[in-house]
Amino acid sequence: MSTNPDLVTGDDGLARPRWATAEPLKTYYDTEWGMPVTDERGLFERLSLEAFQSGLSWLIVLTKREGFRAAFDAFDPESVAAYGTGDVERLMSDPGIVRNRSKINATIANAAATLTLREVGGLAELIWSFRPARTPQPVRLADIPTSSPESAALAEALRQRGFRFVGPTTMYALMEAVGIVDTHLIGSHRRGSSGVWP
Image (cartoon, rainbow, N blue to C red; front, side, top):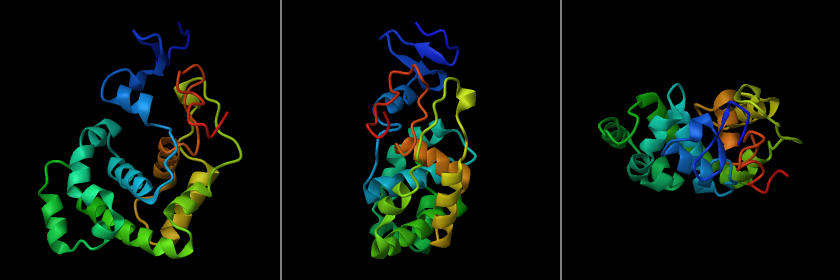
């Protein structure tokens, strides 16, 4: 049993951070969060969901994830980039997603920017090029950074290419979610599970 108050040992004997002890966050933590995502569509989805999460609880976005996938054509960048005014109004009336016009418009703009990036290596190559030389070694939740020089540089690189809602904090959350950094607490059963970091 962990003596770390930020880790909770479940009935299955596995230690998780407090935020990941109840569903659906528990399954998300155990199976997806922090695992490498290296394909364009997968990264465009994560980038979009992190933007919608900005200022909100991740739980809200996670519970609406299937609604987002249905509303945004499974986050196919080519489909989303072609959205027009009618699609924006359709999305603004869709209770299955977070209805924020600025974030919807940003997602459409980000899809177009994703397509443009294909000419110079693609979204995955750009995002993963900001992997740091080392990852944090957090013991407590308070030890986990909310941004980094790399996330700030990634945010700037994306903004220069036309992306929106990609600030340093949002990009750090993305880097955590897709395995670029490993911020699982030391002692968690998921620490080191991505294969990216020892």
